[in-house]
Length: 166
Image (cartoon, rainbow, N blue to C red; front, side, top):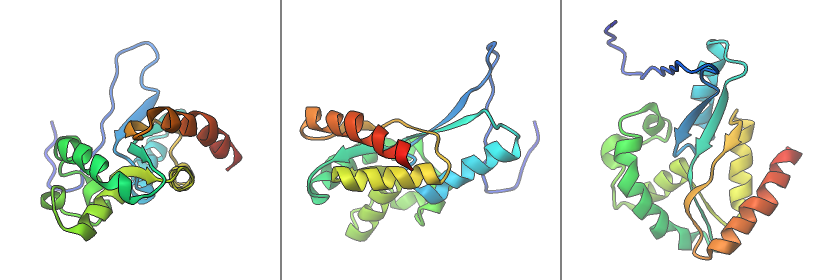
C-alpha cells in the first residue's frame, strides 16, 4: 500500500464480477462544481462506459422555505458519515465542522450543496445543471415531499421529459 501526503482523496473502484463496475454512485451529490471532480477522474481513467450517478436528498415543496427543516434534519443525520471530510465539503466552500451548524447562511449553503429542494421547476433546473456537469443518472432520495404522491408525480412525469430535452 502506497502512503500519500496529499489531502486530496483518491477514488478507488473495484469489482470481481463478470461485468465489473458500471457506475460510480455519489450520495448527496447536488453541487455541479463537485460533479466535475468524479467525472474528470472517470475520464482520466479512460472509463468512457462508466456512469456517474448522483443521489441527492430531494424535497419538492411549493415554497423553498418549507424544505429547509425536513432536509436539514436528514442531512444532519447523514452528512458527517456519508460525506465526512471529503472534497465535496471543500467544493461547497465549507469545513467539516460546519456541517452541523445553526448559522442560517451556512444552512442554506449546506442545502444547496448536498440536496435538491424547492418548487418542481427549481428542482428541475438544479437537476439539469448536474446533468450538464457530467452526471449520467439521478436518483432522487427521501424525504421527496410532504405530499408524497405529488412529489413522485413531479419526479416521474416531469423530470425525465425535461432532462431528455437538454
